[in-house]
Image (tube, one colour):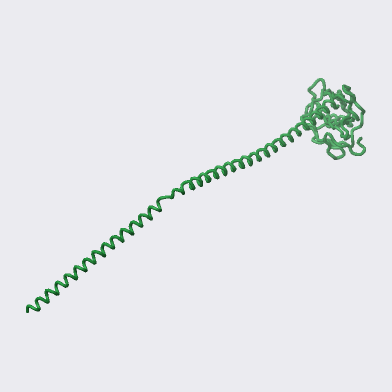
Length: 286
């Protein structure tokens, strides 16, 4: 019994000693792990510090780089501004040149037009101007007699009216004719110097019937006189002919038998062809 007891106590003691060794080993291992953890943490913190801390030599380099970048941007902006100013200056110069050319062109045209207008004005002021003087008068009417009108043409211009020619026709109608068709060019009278009156008498180709005389006296019908005249301007080198027409009507209420001007002159035809002033004479009209 005692032997077994002592063996059991020895065994327990041996186990306790073994457990103590194991505990010491565990303590040592724990210390090692703690030291290793501290070492790892220290290394990590040192690495973090190295990341956050820039080397002393890096600041000057970064400063120089930033200065270079700023200067490069400034130079680039200045270059852009210079190029932009040059571009705008070029366009402005081009626009100014275009405006100057346009103004010069307009000035030349205005000068030419003014010169042409002056020349035309001088030509008009120096040209002949032939027309009747408004004194057309009907001689006393008689039945079975041909009506006759006395009128005077005059050159109101500064030069001689060359190749003056005139013709006339009569009608007894209610309204003036819209068209007068001559069988040919008016018979020539001659040249008319300035301020020279040319008295002319026109006689109708028909005799006045009693019915026509009565209608004219009571205003049922009217007696109309159409005159056609032409002349040449010596300043016109083209040989154009100046043409004029007049329309007069007789009012029996006027004691002086002076003819009145119609409201509108008729359209002129010569051999069925219309003429306007001025016009180029056809063969046989000169």
